Image 1 (tube, rainbow, N blue to C red):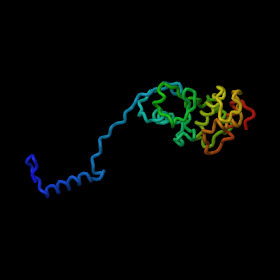
Image 2 (cartoon, one colour):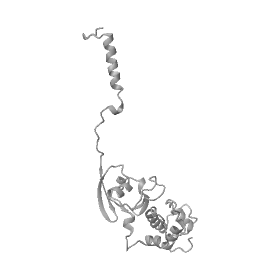
Image 3 (cartoon, rainbow, N blue to C red):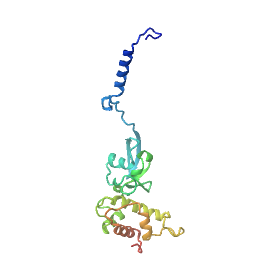
Image 4 (cartoon, rainbow, N blue to C red):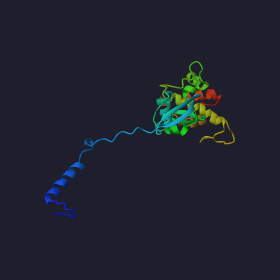
Length: 212
């Protein structure tokens, strides 16, 4: 056959061209050249961690927990479930407790962050840390940093009059009892089940006598 541009194409030639094209598109994925890797874009992030200004360039997908552990080497905050269900990663941001595995570091640019390393240190323990030691409020200790951070923040929430799900009287602020402690600490799981000792440590710091 001959087209309008003067090129001729036989039936055999058309079949050969078709087979060649099909062979090219049917190459397995591993035989095709890989695209050149593009480095992940980073964004500058700065915050104050345990009283010190820290500046990082981070992939915007990095969680606050990974920024603290992997980039600032503050490994006290633990990666437990990585789904915000166990509380092992609890830190305080602007004085409020959060699960650091559920939030991105870039969301906290300019914030003040406190980790367990900033709460106290050997020889100068925070009262809650000392109470956990006194009442043996830990077993393996993996959940302990998150438990302590949550306990400290929880007592401040009570002082601030923030009600919990079990608060019976919203006009009575600052009340601590067993129900309040257990409800407010329910987001922190201890796989070793040292709950009674943890409650005793919190009650000791709170000065509550009817918590058991």
